[in-house]
Image 1 (cartoon, rainbow, N blue to C red):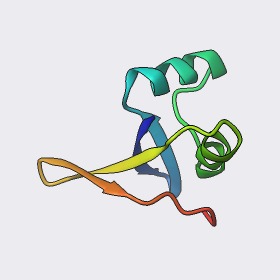
Image 2 (image 1 turned 60 degrees about the horizontal axis):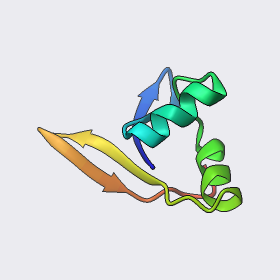
Image 3 (image 1 turned 180 degrees about the vertical axis):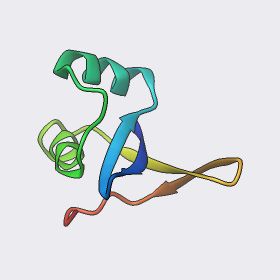
Length: 68
């Protein structure tokens, strides 16, 4: 699943990018997720989680840190 990292009011928020991530957001009733939500998706549901940031005309992949 792919998520876009955005900083909003000093908080890291992760927005679904792919159809599966958007479907999960709809099921959960959420438009965005926190880092601990993504760690749970990765570790408890065994789903590959990819995080991207928007950077100068494209997206750059970043690592999801367990400590966020």
